[in-house]
Length: 422
Image (tube, rainbow, N blue to C red; front, side):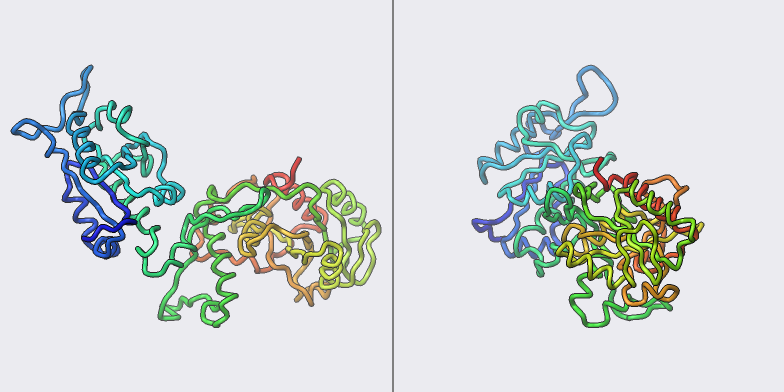
């Protein structure tokens, strides 16, 4: 193994060095070590004992179950490795430490030498933590027999971030938990990785998403970004940032005059005013009290693009079925924003039918559809995580409620989900 100036070095201190040596002897880690990109030194704490039984543990002061690793062999091993190969950033692996995650891996990838202390039994004498380590880390809220598995996790997570360790550096960019940058209101945040498929294109009646077979690289990239964010909402919604729309963000409530009963016009005007929306009537007839009237959604989108300098997002509003997960505005807006890589533009909430059932929507279809249930408590719907395939947010949802209650549900959902600032 060749060690060059920019080699990322790991020093692992353990009573079972064979565990670490076996882990790094295969696959990508073995190739990285052969090329001198990574070095892993395993130090047996028993080599630094002074009795013929090579004793590294003793009973705890004050009594109690279990044994504690003595401080002398640990301190001696740390000092020996420092003298032989130089200073190192020393980490004690303990279930009581802060959680190791991708941000920690990215931070540690900038360290030239990393020491990992693997405890056993009841742990290591706490004077080591107090005086010999730089930080403590845990890989989760559970207890293992020792720190060797945790050390292997950290070695691989950190080493693969070093340039040259992975054959294709682009593999890292779109992975689960990869961080993004953004402005103060909307941030890309953290997502899980998008789904992957390979040949055959159809397996036991289950087909690969058609977009992946079409050869349109832009469409594939948009699908991957949307799928990554949808998968995160389904499986790990707590990873998504809780951003808000800026004050006075332009929001329009567009209603189909074909669907509005005569006695609903006044209700819709009040609903829009209460929510801070501007009401737009779309269709052949006019709607009393609506400041905007357009013949169809295409004309409305063109008008608002001229007004605001950005093309608006057109979002359909429907209701959920009895066994379907709710798709509220936070999920929909977050997925579309992550797909686009930018904060939301002006928003149009279309309370109407799809183009198949309403001429006003024939020339312009919503980019996504909300599926609301005004009677269901707000928050993450666990049914999102149970679907065998990702939900298609582009599919029209039926409007099982009259227009006014459905329009009111949009405003209530935006406020309940924290998208509108107080």
